[in-house]
Image (cartoon, rainbow, N blue to C red):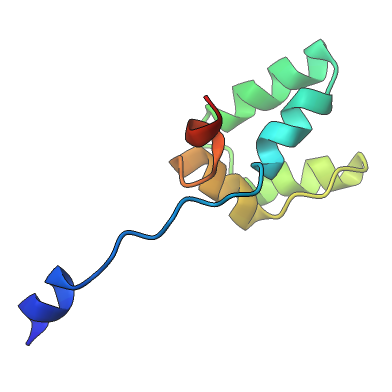
Length: 80
């Protein structure tokens, strides 16, 4: 039965590794960090676009990693 299956779901444990986006933010200069924080907070800028620009400047972060960070499904809330 569907309801039994749903009730039996367990919450997934939070990731133990540090969030890649947080790691990148910590390594950037203040100017670049502010720019990245700004686009992360702008919903009309796609995850793929952010990933592409970062890669063009030597920083690899997939669109899915950026998406997880933006949704709050990364380890950032654990680190606070």
